[in-house]
Length: 291
Image (cartoon, rainbow, N blue to C red):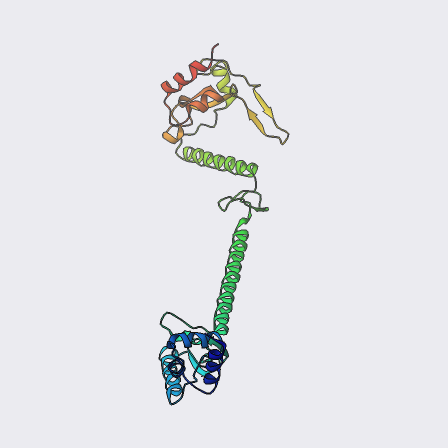
C-alpha cells in the first residue's frame, strides 16, 4: 500500500466514508482496508447514511439484554473494541469498560461493588472471629471458675487440676478415707452392741496373753514394737504388729465376741480380709514367712 493510497484512506475516513466505499475506489479487499484503519486509529462509525445509528442501537439492545438489571450504558461506543462508559445501578458509580463485554463469554462486574462485597465478607469474618474468641474466653473463665473449689476435708479453697477433684491434697483425701472407715466401723460395732453381740471385755493385751503372742494364721510371734510414729504424730504399725482378727468377718455376719476373735499379725490380717477364706489365707501367708 503506497503513501498516496494511505493518504486517500485517511481523507476518506475523516470525511465519513465507509470501508466498503474506500475498498471499491482503490480496488482493495474490504477487510484489508478495515484492518489498516483500525491499526491507525481510523476505525469506528465513519460510513455514510444510517449505518452508524443502527449499529449503535443494536449494541445498546445487546447491552441491555445482558446487563439491564445491573448496569446502564452511558456513552462511548464507536466500534466493537472501543472503550465505553457504564453506570452501576447498585452503587451509582460510572466506570470504563471495553465494548467486548456484550459478548456471550464475557462478564462485567463493578469494581466498587466487588470491593464492597469483599470488605463486607472480611468484616463478617472478623466479627465471627471476635465472637468465637469471646465465646472461648467465656468458656475458659467458666472452666476456671469450676476449678476453684473448697476442700471437703479442710475447707480451704484450691484450684483443682480436674473437675472431679474434691480434696486439696492427698493428705486431706487420706484423712477423709480414714474418718469414713472409722465411722463405718463404729456403726458396725453399734449394731452389734444393740443386738448383744459386742463384748466390751475384749482387748488386744488379753488376746496376746491368751494366745501367747502367737498369730493363729501363720504361727509366728507378734512384735508389739513393730511400729513407727511420724513427725505429724501418726501411729503406723508394721506387718508383725499384733491385731484383733474376727474369724468370721463382721461384714459377713460375725460377732465381736470371744468365740469369734483371735490374735493375728497385722500383715496376716490384711491378707485375710473379708473376701478370702481362712484356708486360702494360710496358703498365701505360709510362703511369705519362715520361722
